[in-house]
Length: 333
Image (cartoon, rainbow, N blue to C red):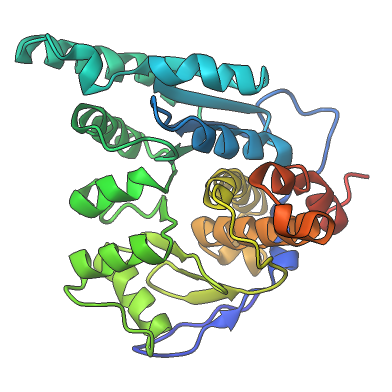
């Protein structure tokens, strides 16, 4: 895969996404044991939003991760468990409404307990997905901020989407300079990031240069700007993914993407470690590789789902085509 270093408004290169997928997707080896193909944790899910964390977590499994966890509020846990017995659901998060009569010291103790419970699991995870269905409750966001800080201290990669991006936009220091972080903003989330970090409006005449500058300003964090063509930058290169795709814009596709990127990021790191950076692809930032692979696979699955369902295509239809889409590019045998 050829990458291009851009300056100001330089053009990006279309990524050889299928080449990336073939390179980083591990073979199915009977000698491998449970967990080696990836252990993903989604941090999200509250009373109002239970679909998003499910979509992200189940997508990770459908692609090939071995284990997928969801850390959510108690009000969301039973609902998410009912969607699938495949997910490991931890109802440890709290929202303000559930602790309304608790004083400040009590809240600090609850926050400390939540962090302690998550820390018991953190070293097991290959990547975190922060934000799907998280909501914007202040106490909940405060707890997740602490989880992100601990994850960063432990060098655990993280993909930030949805309300996680709301949190990061208001507290950019949570990811600034952390090169194992990926942000996956849609058009409105990207607009808020640009306004916060670059202090201006989105410049549609300089999309590549602006994305490059944004990533640099946040210290080399990888950003996947979702759109007609997905643009990806880590502050050093800009890559685009425009193959496949669907005109259907049902809600939830971003959740599939975040779970997908988490898996492929984990696989890219394994690939780079195994090849000792001897191949061209293994010299590329694993967060960029994960974004390229996740973007391409989602777009292919969306195209297949749309071919069959047309206007009635839903996120669940796209999820059911993830395995078929990956198999077409990387046959299991």
